[in-house]
Structure formats: structure tokens, C-alpha cells
Amino acid sequence: MRAIPYRVLALLLVTGLAGCQSELPVRNTGGPSGGSSGGADSGTSDTSSSDTGTADTGTADTGVVDSWPASWTRLEADALAEVNAARARGADCGSEGVFGPAPALSLNPILVGTARALSKDMGNRNFFDHTDPDGLDPFQRMEAAGYNGGAMGENIAVGYATGAEVVAGWLSSDGHCRNIMDLDFGVIGIGYARVPGSDYTHYWTQNFGDR
Image 1 (cartoon, rainbow, N blue to C red):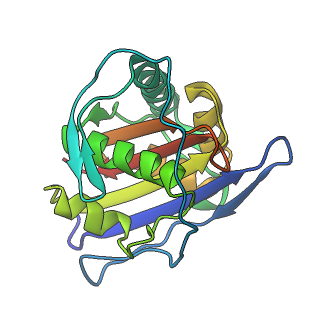
Image 2: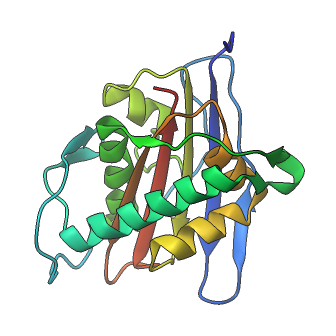
């Protein structure tokens, strides 16, 4: 059993075919909050969409996710399948170590809500950061939504149009790979949002927890 809770962050920015920039995870063992600093430009999104259907609900302090387009939900499910396939086979996360096979992650409704809310918020307000324009970090958002895990983490990414692509991108970055493979994590929330007119159109968030 881990004696001290920890929190991890990772960041992945994709700009077309030019590659990515990444930030190694940050671990915080001293308190309930942590994360990278950042601000953002404000903006609005095109709210028109041809997607239909609803999905699981969840609440985050960035807003209530009442329903989700079915096409977005399918992309999230694809990403979860890719994550669990990676955990089943194990992965070499470079500087973060080699990880053997790990149990599959299950969806946590609260973390689904926080992940979806951040992805939509990043597109709507046109920012890309773990810390939102209101100054809230991932752990504050998760805890405000009612999640009280001992281990918590977040991966974010932009620009990927499919679940397979975004997970492959995360796995190619040592810090993101460790978050995906970490044995301390047992649950996950994945949120995808498509926001036309924003800088990157496609926004992804993974929130991890231990229970």
C-alpha cells in the first residue's frame, strides 16, 4: 500500500504533422493540489453539430456535462480499448521504465465527467493546459467533482481525430506512457470533444484514479 498519495500530470501538443511537444509528469506528495501554471485566450466554439445521441453524465467544476454526442462517446470507447490493450501487453516507457502487463482500467463516472468537461472547456475557451483559465488544476477539478482518490493523474492532447492515434501519441511520450501503464491506477475517465473553429478542433483528456 502506498503511504503517501501522489498526483501526476502530462501534456501533449500535436500541431498537424510537425510532431509534438511534451511535458514530463509532475508529482505532488505534499498537498491536495498541484500542476503546471498557465493561462489562456478566451473564445467561443461553433455549437452546430451533426452528432446525435447521449451518453453518461458527469459533473465537473467547469460545468455539468448533461449529454454527449454518440460519435464522441465511440471515440472515447476506442481510446479506452487502446489503453487497455497497451496495459495487457506491457510497454517500454523509456526514461520512466519498462512496465509489464497491468490489469485493465475501468471507467469511473466522476472522472468521465471531469475529463469531458476539460476537453470541451479547452476547445470553447481556446486553451491547452492542465490548469484552466480560472486557475484550477486537475486535482482541484476532480476533488470538486467528488473524486477523492489517493493517486490521481491527467494526460491531455489535441489534434488527434481518433482514439487509436491519440493513445499511440501518448504511448510514444515517456510521461504519458507511465500514466497509462501505472499499476497504482485502477480507474479512468476519457473525454473527447470536437470544437470547430478552435485552434486544434480535437481535444482529449484522460483522468486517472486509484479507485
